[in-house]
Image 1 (cartoon, one colour):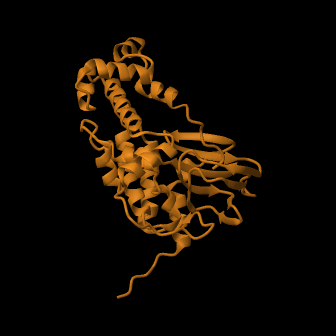
Image 2: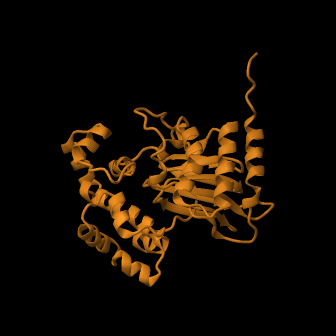
Length: 305
């Protein structure tokens, strides 16, 4: 017996119904739902020129229409359309409010580098159609989007739990041509993904280069082009992990060992260099891990999606 494909219009309706809780009224700009999950709204037609996102995003148009231009290629997205927009690619975007409700709205999930390691790497991925940002809907993808958004919004969600909520969705998107930008990781991102699996391990550049499939010289050259070095990335990942552990009331000596430091003095020096204070000083000030990390990251917030 042949399987019957569910109509795209029915899947779009299901997606819209499942995300109804995220609809907003009378607001413009970014409306947060949870860390890394928000709506972008516009009450008037707006054109955004040369948008360059700092993180790739997965989004759903909830009302109005979005037109995305990349060079001479364009894509029109309508309510119920699921889309992926890439990072570090200049795009022109036109957001047009719905005539009836007078509002454009899209729900956005930002995808951080660290949320991709659980997705197996592939040597070849489907190439997106020129100018296409829309993801083909399936029942599984629709259910995964609704589940991920709802679980994140019902937080609070720790980073490890957020990653698990997104894993199912990202795995389903691997074979979608329009979602390819989510998995086109830089060398820096790939190093972070590998060393992050076990920060207590004595990682060496040659073995990480081999795991990525590069010679050590090519590996170091590509990191240099990205303004990074293997030592810098490894130290950054270890310090951020230690900071999270200490923020969760782990003793500094135990945190140091868990992220690969045998010398407490060496650990304390690197910690203070990265965060401006040693673990004891941070505890005395009562500064939370999230507050300090956010201040250090100093990333511009994405606008206009």
